[in-house]
Length: 504
Image (cartoon, rainbow, N blue to C red; front, side, top):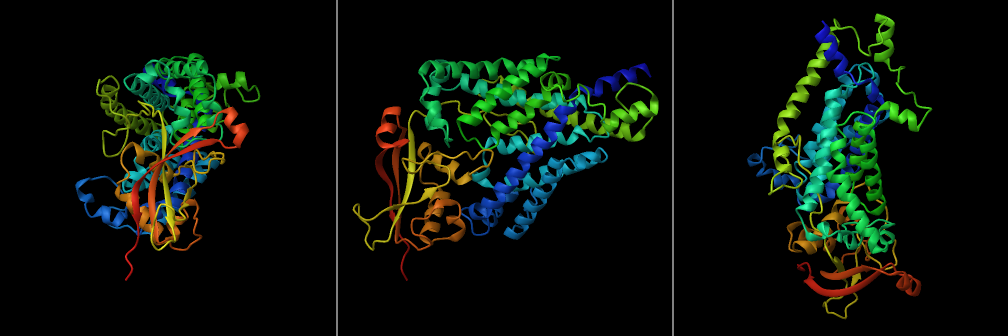
């Protein structure tokens, strides 16, 4: 019995109630944003009449064997029902309603979110090919086993959440060290704030900081991603200090750009390393130990013990322990492949090693783009297109457009079309989805136009559309004072010559 009691004392993490509170509600809030983002954009991008229709994609889906509710049938109506359920369940978790019940209720709720969102991601094609999609799925599955207020936070799951943060941060750090020389010579931030996929309202101010501060940023990034993550596994207060460093650096990234829910996920998950006593030290009005938690008060009242755990003979308790240990063992076994990848000279970035997208590898911006080239989409009503025709530009919500426009803060909301527009100059404009977009614009498709900030033809059909490139650079302080413009725009060349619809 002493061994059992010792194990139970280790298994329970009474100093991690705040961590569990933040992890569950934070991850649920990110699921809410993800389902909302999908509800607003998915049908126009990959729905029945989207740019890359799911029904066509599913015709060859049997070869991929990815789990999804849409495997045998897809409709926009069914998709909207999936999003509605996801929004409802994630909203309830943010409010803490499932957490007030038995341990299996939040478990079931998070597994529902995981299954529903995985169904969307696995048919979302290139529009859902971002690392933070699998990060959200893995986070949702992991925090599902944190239990409810009726049981103490389980230490194995908290350790696995820390392991997720470690892979996220250390993996990103290793990708940078093995990537372009600009990270090793500390010049990456000379360019990154200007050339990142979707600048935010403060990105220009960050870009115009002195170069010594940019070098300090790069050095601080290496420290935060290559050194600090190891200390997340240390006892308190070192674990909390390491988590605080991760949180502060991620807040810096939130302020400097728009990276969907990537940085917000890191902030939420970093709380796995935060102890209640440290939170109490910083915020004295929060108890050092949340003794009002039902599992704690019930234990004291029923057994007269100060051990924060129900009686060892409680069958329900042991079922919970077995479930947590089984999930922990599964995630531990699956950790072998990403662990090996972290120290491989051919390190993969943002890759899953199993069809369930659990225990993945992460990383971003191994090399930094030096120049910002934007793809500009234009249309004209002229019967015969020419260079001197009146070409009107389609304005996007997140990507840069007008020279005097201040970029908006969108994160954690994800503008998928705008993000993919950033990749076009780095790859090729001759993507199937981009030509499909041009065809939708020629037809003035209402669903597609809703993805944009401004339709220059106000619902009318243009006769021709084209795509050209332009160099975007942040204006210096002097240039801004002279012109009031935040961007200096230099037209480059036409990439896709005018395309029109055949007239019957």
